[in-house]
Length: 422
Image 1 (cartoon, helix red, strand yellow):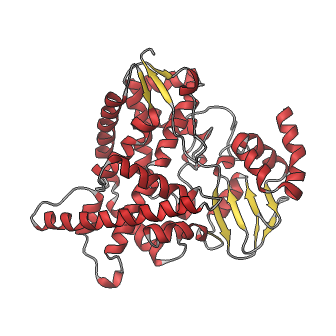
Image 2 (image 1 turned 135 degrees about the vertical axis):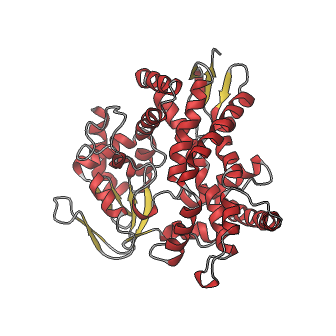
Image 3 (image 1 turned 30 degrees about the vertical axis):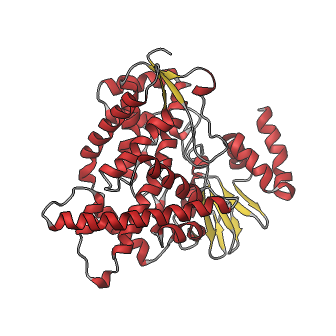
């Protein structure tokens, strides 16, 4: 309560004077306490000349359901010069609707059993190869490794080597979604990564087409795209294939890795729920493993908010006591993290209750820009955790090694566990 009262006392000064510095402190160190106060006192927080922060469940869903008003245009700065014009930075365009439709057709839900088998095998291999003296550093040896290798096996984009793929994934994801300070170094590394990916994929496309012509078609997403013959009028040419294939790497590694270690971190502090997950894993109860993982992630989601740009004057939560006019040109921070803890729509939000309705979770976003590969993530993330807990008695490593360490960056960089005793 002392912390809540302290934050309450700071909000007025924050709105009028402090701006970004206090906001960053609260978001980084006390996000849930901060959001709780805002939901109760100022659910749509307007900082004149800076941004608007949206915290209530209903308001978050309203904003994310209005892509023509709350646009993804801010992401174009980082995406376009790196991977080319991309669906995630376009609203109400052919690029968005056409590319998304085609990509969803080749990311077939019928593939999910195969994806689960791939992930299980890759995870077991990574754990066996990565464990040292009873410890496993999860980020470098498992939570990044498996998504990178799945990008090769299932998406058909193996890259020249694992470390290069990790580098491409890191810098593109960093600049596109986390570079709020507009670091030129981060942006340069992102653009360079995009150009390197494109050059690699051009060579790979030539090789794959030769294999297809020789009667050896692949059963991966990239090969399916190359085999898809669409009329020129559709506009889905090789440049679109390359851009969308690069997008699979951009969105598929760092977010998956963060989810895995943040779920484990939460479960290690909840022995009852962790034991339930272990029992479900041993029984092959994938649905319960998923439910426990998704609920654990609610207590420390991947991102505190997504960024949108208000394209026209709009009154959010119109007719309510919190209605707020948001002026055109205002950056809007829309917090799924806060929404998932909003007691107005999520019963007993501070309690761990697995098996909540799917619509209470916004881990994969909401509305038009829900994650393209959400169905793959819903299999991959819990399956990696399942294989880890089946590998032996897994617990948090002692000392600093067993704590999440972001090393000053936007993603978890180290998190060690014991397998057996260590």
